[in-house]
Amino acid sequence: MNKFEQLGLNESLLLAIKDLGFENPSEVQEKAIPVLLEKNTDLVALAQTGTGKTAAFGFPAIQKINVEDRNTQVLILSPTRELCLQITNEMKNYAKYIKGLNTVAIYGGASITEQAREIKRGAHVIVATPGRMQDMINRGLVNIKNINICVLDEADEMLNMGFYEDIVAILSDTPEDKNTWLFSATMPAEVARIAKKFMKEPAEVTVGHKNAGSKTVSHEFYVVNARDRYEALKRLADSNPDIFSVVFCRTKRDTQSVAEKLIEDGYNAAALHGDLSQAQRDGVMKSFRGRQIQMLVATDVAARGIDVDDITHVVNYQLPDEIETYNHRSGRTGRAGKTGTSIVIITKSELRKISSIERIIQQKFEEKTIPSGIEICEIQLLHLANKINDTEVDHEIDNYLPAINDVLSGLDKEELIKKIVSVEFNRFLEYYKKKRDLSGSGERSERSSEPREFKAGDDVRYFINIGSRDDFDWMQLKDFLKETLDLGRDDVFKVDVKEGFSFFNTDAEHMEKVMSVINGFDMNGRRINVEISKNDGGGRRDHNGRSGGGRSSGGGRSSGGGFRGSRDGGNRDGGNRNFTKRDSGSGSGERRRSSSSSDAPKRERKSSEGESKGFFEKAKRSRRSE
Image (cartoon, rainbow, N blue to C red; front, top):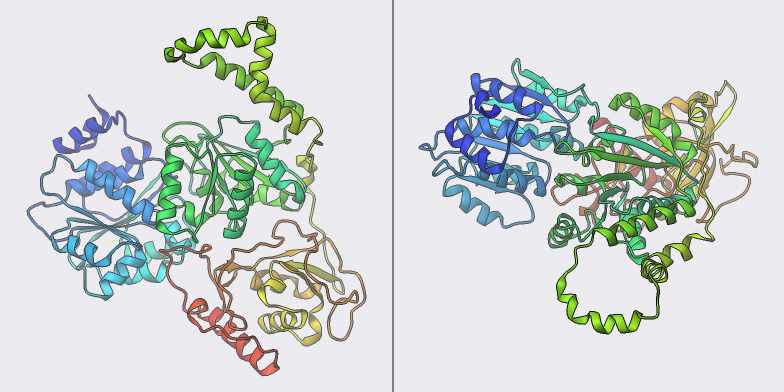
């Protein structure tokens, strides 16, 4: 007896399941489906990406629909266009034997008029992204006041993308007696707030531990010098010849840069980020699914909704700003029961983050060293030999063999093998034979060392990931810091502005305030981050608070490590920057629009004290409103 039959699903769904080739339900399906079929209830289900959540809510939702009633009965909210379309296709496959059941997708980047027309023709199920859904509600193009079920899929992702207000507004437009089914990989505070506000005594289903990582994914980290990060990525790719991976960067700028370098170096790579048009995104994803692309370099926001089962590796070229996001990244591999590897490339200064991630995912990392050139050559040579051995001969070549035999007649077997292998192998040998080994410092015990302790009277030197490229000079940065932190003019000193990052000092008594208040500000889509620098800043403290070394131009190297020069190419409008305490990503077509930044007219930044104060007052009000 098929195990799906034991879950209480009807004959039409079981026929569709058979066609789809499903044999046994996943853990989340086995736990959730009977609960949802037995009674009308709210549900909170925590399970990793790739565990079969769509079927877990899709099957019971379809079984509860009355096809004779043409009104919308089920609303499914998902974070991205890709996931929205994926869920829509799967729902249609599940309902293929149920005549007349209609599912409609609503998402940005497509004609809102055509989508409204489809809904008017009858949509039992609407699958939507929050931004477009709220737009259609505001225009009166959709009616969800009588739905029976609302599903929040990838709830934590939607909230991380800044959709909290949209979701609250949408749910407020639905009936109180509906059932809400919330599916999420993690349970951050905002998800818990949604559950508390809109759900009544929900049933709970948890696959594994809350926020824990998938057991099918192994975790590795490699410590390198900051300047060797890209070289390390290349070596990891070369040491895994069959790699089929997503490479995560923090910003759009880094994503594009890394992808371009990989392409120049002969790798099958492409970038996926928020600046691409929808047609470009679709083209990249089609090539990736078809394996024409081996290394997809992506931002976290752009990668949401990627559903490809055979990804072998996830590479964290840079760790995410939010540690919880690591779980979503690693969940892109090890799907559908297969194993996968999550790789982290870090510098010494970031080692402490590994311990933080281990606590959250409840799994241990294995520290490894970047393979040497000789090791990579050995791996590639054996891979090539196996590839030759496993190649199936197309006998169309038989017609050309006499001519080929004439050309190669003077070679014995050993010499012929050497030449055949050398055709492919020589480029690796030439590249690596003079390359140095990459060793960042790798004893795992080093990361357990205690951070430097500060006592009263000490100065603390900070690294911050904004600089002259963000239209700051040392005086403007000093003004921003003292106003935001509510400190006196002499409490911020040794301000040293570089091109993509800066340094500043405060007394040790202000350290906790600096780390809690400044970390997490959003500047036109880019998060501001602060780290304590190992450099004390040198020079003397002058009455302006500038480092005794004088004003610095761009191009220096940060001693702070992890956040050096972090940018996402977000909009800048001179003096009209707005800062808010948000958890959103780095930009997306579906992302809820901010109330500030890019809509304001561009104007030249003035350096008068009065205008600076007006700007910082706006920043403070924005922060308080959050």
